[in-house]
Length: 311
Image 1 (cartoon, rainbow, N blue to C red):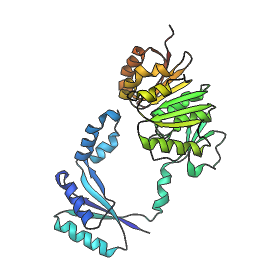
Image 2 (cartoon, rainbow, N blue to C red):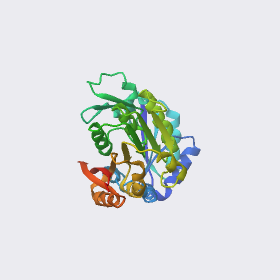
Image 3 (cartoon, one colour):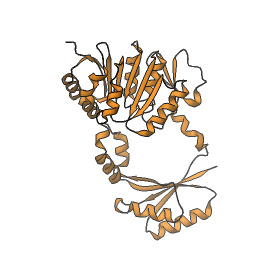
Image 4 (cartoon, rainbow, N blue to C red):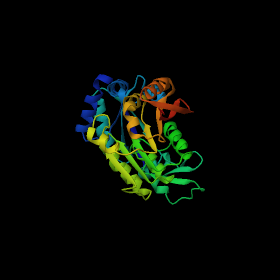
């Protein structure tokens, strides 16, 4: 089946009204691309990340448009759309898309991903492929953060390969990739915690792809800095490895609580830190009673490894 990609040029102040008119006329699955809306979203959610893809910002610069897709045989639908767009005083362009299997083509964006010397992140549909002697970490990618492609995640996994791990606490676990990697590398148990309740189900599902379930793997939802009950539950034991792969501001906020999960031989690995924020994170960890043993670097990102300060 062949589709047409139709692009309607709008203005920021009228893009929502245009989308509403299209929806009312029966056109659905609209894609809105608007610089002003994107920048507003960034301002309202700035606390959740340090890095924004500059190429995406450049692509959206000065842009305000709506995209939708019709089958090339839908002549009546195209005629209705042309009439509506004309009545709104707007212009549209039509582009023929190459015939492809859209339901399956998205999988091309998630090939097997070697990480470090030992691990191989595999999408679940490739779980039976030959791994070349690497240890497989099987995921359903694209649902939440953590596919193994980002430098911050890779650095944590590379650090984990060098360690002997019995128990792991993963704060900000997302897809569960790091907890699963810990189990694949020999850990007896791993706990993944995320503030997004959707992440709990996704992490549990990904663990199942790898043959892990409770009590080996436990997925929880909560904020350890605000939920005293959760904090009490998690701090009942020390963990060999504590992971925080989020962003600098969240790591800084968590820093005072992290020693409560660590014994004298525990290791903390923090990642998701832009190089421009590294000193801020190092200072927060030192103030929390932790000693930074070394850092890793990949592109603009930094990973920090720390221990509890010996008295």
